[in-house]
Image (cartoon, rainbow, N blue to C red; front, side):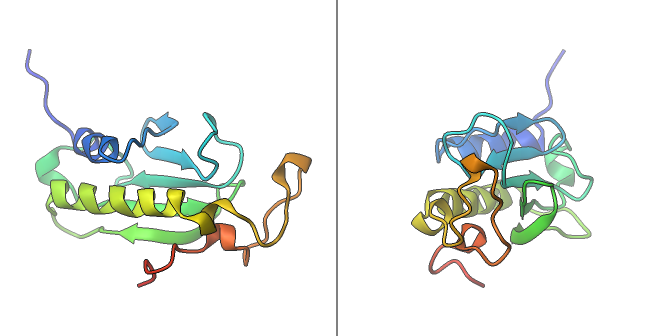
Length: 140
């Protein structure tokens, strides 16, 4: 039996170039904004294609959508929208979304909070907090 490479396999390889491993890898990939976290419990980045899935065929890939979600799963900011009505180059789209996620997660502005929510005490970030801001130079 031969295995078929999925769009998710291509994205996993692109993410590996940045040493990124999702904490959730089911129908979408998820990355907590807290780099040390191994589970979701606060804001996070979710990545999937239009289906939404990560396991579609490479030649039918319709583009990755990467969105920052708050701790309740509500969308806050779109980081990458490569979605299309037809197939897109899966390798190029995967490289692009991996680079955006890496830049966002490792940027000082995404690690330090202006609203002083101190999540460890149960205080939530407000939506204007720089925790949800783009790294410098990544605004489009």
